[in-house]
Image (cartoon, rainbow over all chains, first blue to last red; front, side, top):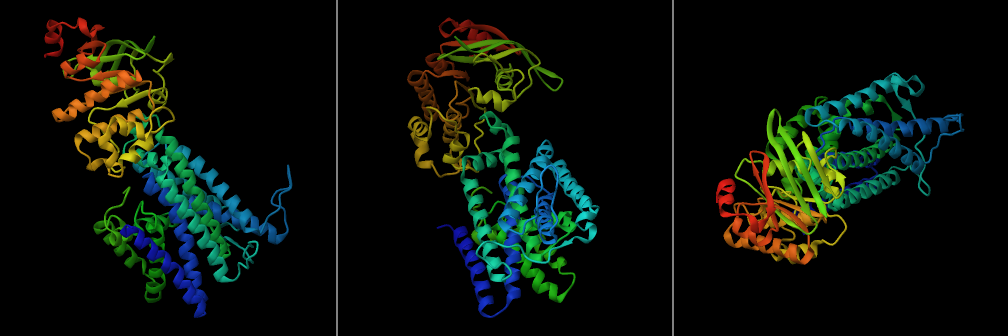
Length: 327
Length: 229
């Protein structure tokens, strides 16, 4: 058993123990914080596929987070107001069913990632960063100027959407759903990294020319990774909107993209549990330091600087040692 | 039947012309040595065939298909298996991962590659960067074989290796020829070993083919004049 496996197991245990303790101590706020960790970690797991495996520094992942969020907001608002989503050429109603909303969110984010990726991946380096950022901002300004769904004020949803067999208004049950999805995403991410596709993607990160020489297209590998990455981040967006029962253009903003990237870098780029560790530390800092000062981001910035300068493998690397298998 | 047919090939690095008039052919099951002094265009010819360098003029046909407009990965998919100069494995992947990442269905799999290069088997989970030069070269050849190529192209496969390791590479090339009948295009400076495995040779001089024929017809006078050995 590697040290990283032990660290990952300890993190998993922590994620399970804290809400259990909160449940017994009747601290629903802690359960909500754990839910936020799980959702933001899920968004980070998505970005980690593009960034950690594919080496794609996307500053536009908020686009997919926002698409997932708005997919939820639009579907739920129509269902709650009993107005059809569209009436022509076929009538489509809104829905408050989480599985359906997730499906739409994942498809919308996947389609967005396909279009954005197909154009952005023709560039590399700083141009790729700028193009993904530009797409994110484009959607941000579009959401601001879309009065049908709240424009700048965003869109409130009065009831949390439903999941068969669960009462999602009970914090621990909604947390269980989020944990379940995070676990699925982590398993998918681990299997993807070890699959021939993941290995080829990793190889393309090292040398596109060598990958082409063995008959693989780096562009296609990266596009598929970008789409999968966008889909997972889109799902996180739908959950985040459901957690807050509120969707706003902020979900599309470059700050959101930056925050998702911070989770990944803080936890460890390319490390399976990196986004989980990063999101947990982010939320803990926000909660603890946010109570002391409104300017808690200064401390986060200092921590990020220390991690980037002295612990390239992030927090997971710091605890588990340097040997990132594919770092 | 000609598997690879190159005629009148020219290519540039930016404004500088590297190839002027390269003509060569490799038949199915044939081993062809591409010879010439340093800087005469051997690696450039290989890069142009594999579409890593744009074709400025001439034709490159492989398995009946025109390669001149294909992107590199599509050319490789047709069955060009390149072992580039300087080995160039995927450094942070393990031996097994290097092989699996490149694999395409066919005769060659992990067991067959480690059958050809038994040294790789115990190194299965070792990262490529930690292998010796010889093992990296074997891995690079194995990676090309895992694509199940119709034509294996080896660019300076024995360069910089210890004599014992070089002999192992030559033995593997000989086995590939006799046991699988694979067509091979070889660039190497070891004329003695080349004479043992190559059926024919092509000599390049200043980016152009100056001689093409069977290996046995290569006279000492020609090797002295064009290859410098």
